Length: 93
Image (cartoon, rainbow, N blue to C red; front, top):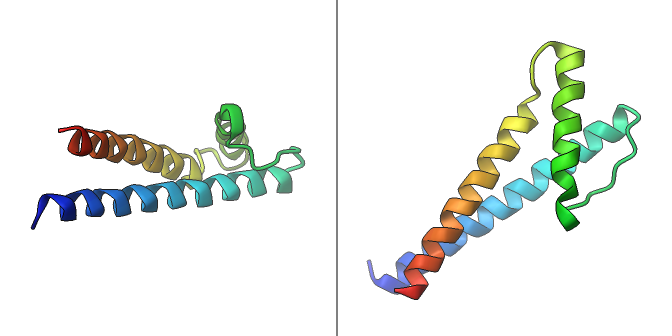
């Protein structure tokens, strides 16, 4: 495996994490809209984190446990940050 191939693989994984995070964000906004909380898909200015907190609160109140989308969002976001840093380090050095 060449160095360029490694960079491409990290980029593909990073892109997959971005798509996964976007999908989960849309599902969270849809859930909030179904529960009469007016929300729009808002990755701008970090508003999704406000909606994430609302989702956690509402899903816990309804079911007694935090909804699955919360953990999925956190996991995809953390993986996104990790692979972004790996990609930056690979390109820089």
